[in-house]
Amino acid sequence: GAGVSQSPSNKVTEKGKDVELRCDPISGHTALYWYRQSLGQGLEFLIYFQGNSAPDKSGLPSDRFSAERTGGSVSTLTIQRTQQEDSAVYLCASSLKIGTGDYNEQFFGPGTRLTVL
Amino acid sequence: GNSVTQMEGPVTLSEEAFLTINCTYTATGYPSLFWYVQYPGEGLQLLLKATKADDKGSNKGFEATYRKETTSFHLEKGSVQVSDSAVYFCALGTLSGYSTLTFGKGTMLLVSP
Image (cartoon, rainbow over all chains, first blue to last red; front, side):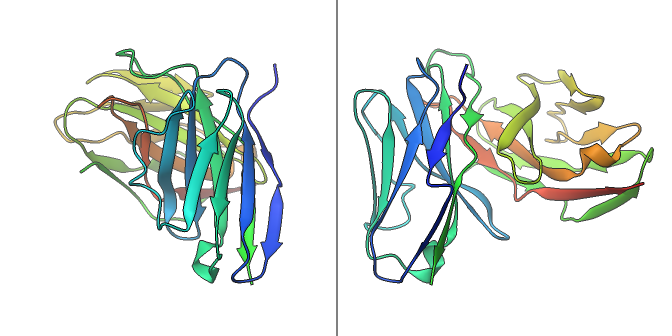
């Protein structure tokens, strides 16, 4: 079946503009995760959703970042008033379920490369 | 908190050479350990995993053993191929309510013919 998809694949924006990044998880996966991959910084966890709920938003870098998920499927990560330090690859992953006492493999999308000029 | 430390790259090898990429971790509780691989232009893929001490994960000729006494999960392959050139990420996952992942910074492997 189809994997995790993300759009756009590349986004170039000017400092101060808002951007929206989209993630389509694998059908039936209830858990969805956002990560950020910055040059030289590895992967940084941002936020996760169980269904439409995001219980822990402490991983978001600042209040300019927000995320939502509707219908237990598509998720949108929004960055307001973008800054140059927001430039990174934003990765989305989904897994079948969480909190079951067993690890559920996360499947990653190809990412969105964001460049803030 | 949880953290993962892996050797810095790039690691440059000739085809058929032996590969080791070191990974150590700090975690509370009993984490599961993973190696992910990112081929050029592609997304992250799970390479192998181990969920408890002394488990050995293996896939595509790669192996890693969960060593609780040394808090390590080193990745090894006996004979690398050019097609193994990629970035390798060590990660740990804990259950504390949700199974998120903590990643190392990644190690680039370059294999020449």
